[in-house]
Picture 1 (cartoon, rainbow, N blue to C red):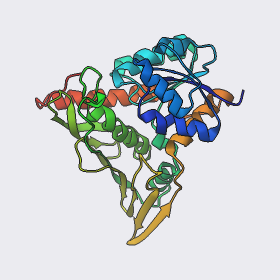
Picture 2 (cartoon, rainbow, N blue to C red):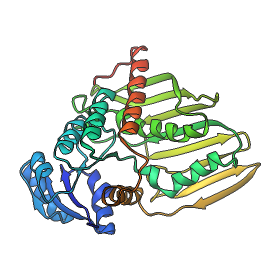
Picture 3 (cartoon, one colour):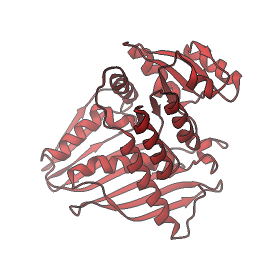
Picture 4 (cartoon, one colour):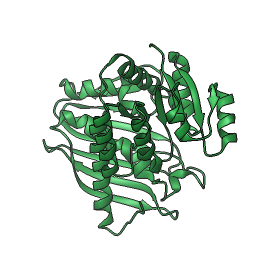
Length: 330
């Protein structure tokens, strides 16, 4: 088998960019989808060339012609349907965050391990050459000893009624955007001694009951520091990572959407260099890696251990922030 037959849960907007277009480019089949509203699923299937519309998510998971499941449902539905897919023996590419809590993420990890079913969390930025180049610059001595890692994830406000504003569906800026920032801190933390400790966390509440913005301060084992800043009510998109070392700094201008801005700018000893690393979608790299893992046993850096560790960081942020009486309903 060289082509994945993919089943899609829901008819979400993210699926077009995260799965549909990459599958078309790579030659994989979209064989089935289902949504709570069948009409939405039918419209989705007609628009994107999904072969069949089924009556329920469970029908997609159980379909014998579905090899793998793509789960882009609301955050609160990630873990339950990841578990359902595991029970059916179907590998899962799940949108981030993979669960509502570290406890749920661990349930998925244990089930996946026992069933020997791959589950990969969709931190697509990790697979793009922009991120790979930033990792190289941080680790090969170009910047000198790393002193600070900064991640910024800003976006304009989603529409009223969007699941990201729903406490019941585990929305909020930390879950939607902060998970990226924390994951990047952990990724680049390998150059400064390992995972960071959270020293301070502040959440800005939204009338809907979730957080609209966040600020997180971190410290790494070497003494390097980090910051994770994000907002779901910003005037425009702004997704940056900056690595600051004793000799210079490197900036990824748009690490979440490198297809829109593929620059990495390095300033070392006063000399500025800008590289363009390619506008192929990070989602395409991600699906390529996932397919290679499922079909050929290729390695992937995102496993269920990583998912648990990231959710532990998110839980810790929420715990620390709650002590300042800026509370968030989960």
